Length: 233
Image 1 (cartoon, rainbow, N blue to C red):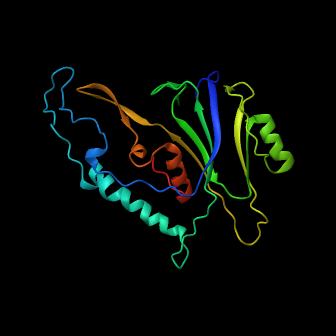
Image 2 (cartoon, one colour):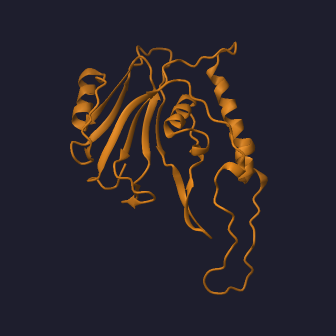
C-alpha cells in the first residue's frame, strides 16, 4: 500500500451482490484519450529522418482491442457460469472484499519502489463458509491458528502501517476434502483511476485506466473479474 511504513492506512470490508455486468463498449472516440500530438525533434540534430507516424499491425491497435478483442473475451468466459442446459449457475452470494489504501493519496508517486496511490482489493466469493477479519497481525493470525476460522470483526482504528501492523484475512472452510477436489479463488488487484501521465502539446495530462470506461467504480470491476477469474487491468 505504501513504501513509507509511517503513512496512515485506511480500509473497509464489504460485499458486492452477484449482479454486476460490464457496461457497453464505447467507441474509441469516446474513450477520452489525449489529443493527437504532432511529433517533435528534441535535442541535437541527427543525420536520419524522424518518422511522422508509426504503423502498428491491425491486431495491436486500440481500435482492434476495443472493437474486437475485448468484447470477445467476456462472452467466451461468462457461458462457463451456466450449466449443461444453459441455465444460470451464478449464485446469489456475490463477492466479498477487503479494500485498503493510503489515506493521503500521492498520485503517480513512489516510495521505495512502491506506488503511493490507488485502491488495493483482496476479494473472493462470499460463500456461506467464508469468514473474515481485519486487525493487528498477531491477533488475526492467532485467531485463525487457534480456531480455524475468523470472527467477522472489523478494526476501525486507522493508523500508520508500522503500528499494530494491520492485516486483512479471509478463511474459507472447504469441508472434508477426499477423492474429489475443492478450490477457492482469491484475487488481489490494484485499481488506479488514472494509469499514466501523458506529455503532449497541452502539457502533462493524466490518462484514465481502461476499466473506467466500462464500470461505474472499481468495486464493480473487482466483482466481475473475481467471479469469472480473469485479469484485465
